[in-house]
Image (cartoon, rainbow, N blue to C red; front, side, top):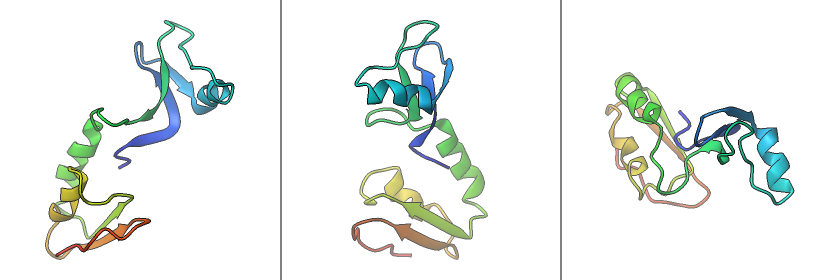
Amino acid sequence: VEAHGSYSIAHCIDCAKEYSIDYVKKFVFDDDIPRCEKCKGLVKPDIVFFGESLPERFFSMQKKDFVDCDLLIVMGTSLTVHPFAGLKDLVNDTCVRLLINREEVGKIDK
């Protein structure tokens, strides 16, 4: 699950009209703001910015998948900010945990 979303697609934040990422790039590379052709709202990639809520799928898939998880891969986190810091504790005791990060962030106890 891509917890912070993806740059693969974009949507208008007002009317939810879908746009390709190429549409957004065209504006950004021209130092302009992408606007919706339908309602003139802002168009942004389907990513989560600081202060925005994570997608509901992030939470619903935890409940479904973590019960049977036998390998947990967590990438790109310092394990200091929740909910990511707690992911390692949601899987069963026999689950192998792999943390991939650019900087050392500590140890996973289990």
